[in-house]
Image (cartoon, rainbow, N blue to C red):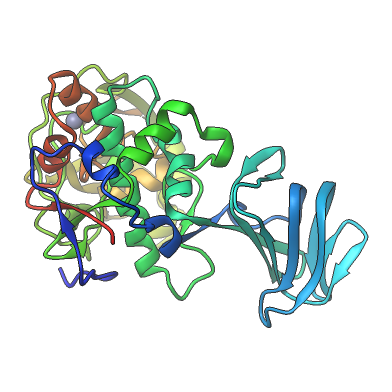
Length: 389
Ligand SMILES: [Zn+2]
């Protein structure tokens, strides 16, 4: 792939066999100060939110950088925005972009959740504001790790997750440079709970892997990961056509069979399917009669489905079909499909898109005493672990 994103001119390569701990103590490479991450905390936008700040802070016009107000210890305050500006309680600021900067190590609370870093508030429509957390890379990973993997899992799996999450975040930063944020705080990017997600164990794991990322030919890889592959991971370009890196190839994973969603069944009434896909039909009055698998990818996931209606036949990509019906109910595209009376019966394996690192598989590999780098290179074969300078 022509890898979009960041290239590093000076990279520190791992010599396999070194422990991550040794690298972590090998000097301050200040990765977190160079790499700021912008996380959208407000999904599609808020009309208002509650903000509280402990410690000193400054409010600046994000467009001009001009200082508008500085103070300390903001009590619980309602924040809203509109065409004429942004309000913090009764205080108004004539701007469509307000930056609230905190001192290092101080926190703010948004709707009762605590975060590190700074706050950017953008007016994005008449009554809607976007709230974006600007935070250093390492502090961001501290807020992600426990959101993505239980803190009691084996430490080598947690280290591997920290490295995959860090790589994924920097990759996303590279491709969203012209937008207001790099990542969302939910499963559509990676689950970020901020300061409230930090634990003593997970913060130690982040520190031990500080600045370590995965590259292929000196370029960050799109380090996708998922909960459970169900026996085999998927080629990256089978899910995202533009993602074609050799290290995102399908591998057989016999290590995630303890996962709660290794096997699943979902029944879907044809009439319930009707509304979710009717916009693909030529005529909105068409009735779905049957659905069957047209073909599968070489890794065994459904690639396309045949949909037969009262008036014709359509072909739909399984990835699109899953997202439209419900990615929580059709947990993956690794399924067999049968029909029982008026219902489609999906019998599947695994949860998630199946590309890259399988989290439950990483747990299984760590329990078999594989090292952090061995786990990562199993799923991202051909990539290299390097440390940001
Ligand atoms: Zn797996």
